[in-house]
Each structure stands twice: as structure tokens, then as C-alpha cells.
Length: 490
Image (tube, rainbow, N blue to C red; front, side, top):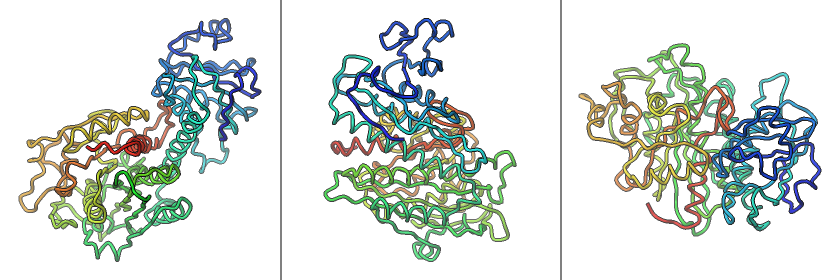
């Protein structure tokens, strides 16, 4: 999809289709040229409500206001309606701004177009794709705001990068486990590094043993696919900050010997969403060439069953020396992250440390399908994640640690247990388990983001398709961009 920015009035641009956003149900606005037809169709202009006037070559879609959180899903809904249709190669749209000097809504509009046009068709015999090849964006706006071509171009460019990286992540998550395993991610990372100018190191089994990453190795033991850890790095000169990102990359999770019920095994290809988000973020960081040093660590493992599988009652020793009593082999992601977090802290002394993981069903129960939980010891850092997620169009809720729940992961025979002794507060107790592997230097710099809910939802919601959403990519990119504008501390 190619984007062109023009000062030509929207009515003078030739295109196969026009998208018109109706703000807050205002059908009397001058941009609405088909009031009678819309009224006849019963169109009210509510959020994401759609009316395609084929004879007029216009799609009307409602948005509750001019903010990016409303514009993005509205535009995504509009362009999604064209998937599988022919004759719509060119599209035109006006500029919608919520503030005279802020281009956030313009960027959101571009993100909506790219995200909404996404379709995962790799395994389809009949591939229904979005037909739009060129988008003409007129700087003739919804309101009489004036923005420069330079600022508009920057917003469009960054929006396209962010959304394309999100779609890149979606493709990885959606790929079935027989076609995507740890070695596949390693190869993809090498190709990306070569293309984008990133550093890339792959830790194979021999290196993992040397690094004493025994909990990760235990989870991988029964799989025919060897595990690996991928380290991608973006290292500009004189960086304004240093950030480490850690992703859980379970390419498939059967539950191990604590076998999942059959229904729960479906969609477990999505257990690699954390690592997939990290590689997507690294792609976008490189393309934007941000003045922030960013390291991405991907813990790639498959959790299977077999005679060599690790077992409930085993006691494992993590990289930092702490021992872990295993009481459930389906609580494997935290075991992988324990070692990868330790390795990340060993290799990089970061100003910020974030991990992304589809870690707990408890988080989905607690905050729903569409929201990520953020945990850690630094309230300001959790707030920053939540604020930047909102700008990016992602939902995040802070979940607070407490000493009472920490007691529930104590073990009588080891330093810590991999599951809690209570069924309640499972998202928080999983976060508290991870905190056992955060050193003192990084405690106030660390945030754990549980993306179990939004990473993979089996229906369309907002700008997201059924399946993988690419959760985490846009929120973290926005946060890193904020730091690039000036390191404001924790």
C-alpha cells in the first residue's frame, strides 16, 4: 500500500473509493455529501458503523471523536469491508486532526488503513486480499487545521512502519507450529538483522548449557525441535537510553506432562506472541532508526510430552542459581523467561527492562480478552506503559504486587515454586515469580506485560482481525519514541 500526501482538495482527487469519517454522528458536517441516502439507510454515525454507498463510490464510517483511539478502528473497519472485492485500487481520504499542531490522529488513520487491510491468507486456496494499492491523503482537513507537509509525511511514515511491524508480528503468531518452531524464528531473525542492520546472536543448545539456562532447557527437553535464544540489537551512537526487551517464545505449548485439555490446545501457536512482538518492535526501531539502544531477547522453545519430558516434582536450577520446584509443567513460560531475563540482565545494563508474554489465563479472566496486564515495582513505569499504550490504541491495566500473594509461591523444598498454592491472583503470582529473577539494579527499571488476552482473539475487534493482533508492538514503539524525544527518567 503506497501513501501519497497532497494539498489537492478531496473533491478534485480521482480515486476508486473515498472513506468519509463521520465524527460524533454529525451528519450535517460539510464533509458529509450524501445525507439523504445515509438517512434512508438508517446510518447514525456511531463508532465503527459502516455505510458503503456503491453508486457514490464512498464509504461512510462513524467515529466517536477525533482522537486516534476512535479514528484508528473506524478506518480499519472501513477498509476491511473492501477485502475480497475488486475494482478498488485507489482510495482517497481527508485529514482528521484532533489538535492544530498534533498529527497523532493522522498517524492513527494510516495505522488503521494498514492494520485493517491485513488478511492472513497463507493457507487459503482462494486468497481474499485487500485490493487497495494507493491511498491519496488530502491535507484538506475535517477542520480548518494547518499542518506542514513535513510533519504530515513524518506521521504517515511512522504510522506505516508501526502498523507494518504489527502485521509482521501477526503473521508470525498466526503461523501453525509445524511450520514455525525455534529454528524458524532464528532464521527469520537473521534475515531481518541483515536487511535492517541489526546485530544478531543465536544461542544454540551448546551455548545455552554453557550459560547455565537449565530451566529453559528443561522445558524444551521433550521436543524434537531444539530451543534457542535470539539476541537482536539496535546500537546507535550516543543513545539517549538503553532498553532491553524479553519475549516468551513458546512456538507450541501442549502443557507438557500436565497436559492441557483438548480445547485449550487449540490456539497454542499463539504462545509465541511475546517473542513475536519483540522481533516486530526491533523491526520498527531499525526502520525508524531511533536514537535509543534497544536489545531484543527471544526465548524460543516448544513444550511437548515424551519420555524425556520434565516432570511435576522436579527441582530445576535457574541461571541466577535459584532453585524452582515444578508443580505444573504447563506453567512453563515463566521458567523460560526466568533464564532469559537473567541472561538479558547479564548482557545489558539497561535503563528499562520489559518482558512480553502470553503468561496466564488468569490475566484474561481478570481484565478480559482485550487488555494486557502490566506489573512491576515501579508505579511510574507502569503508568508510562499504560499512557503510551492508550496513545497506540492498546489497552493496559496495572496489576499491583503484594506480600500476601508473594507468600503463595513459597516452596518447602526449593527457593520458589512455579505455581501458586491458591487459584486466585494467578496473573500477579506469575509476575511475582518472574520478579525472583530480576536483580537489584533492574528492579525499578522492570515491567512485566502479560498479553495473554489481546494477543490472540478469535473474532474481529476494532482494528484487529480474528486471530493474532500483534499486541505489544505499537505500545512499546510509542514508549521508545517518547524516550527518543528526551530521556525523562523513571
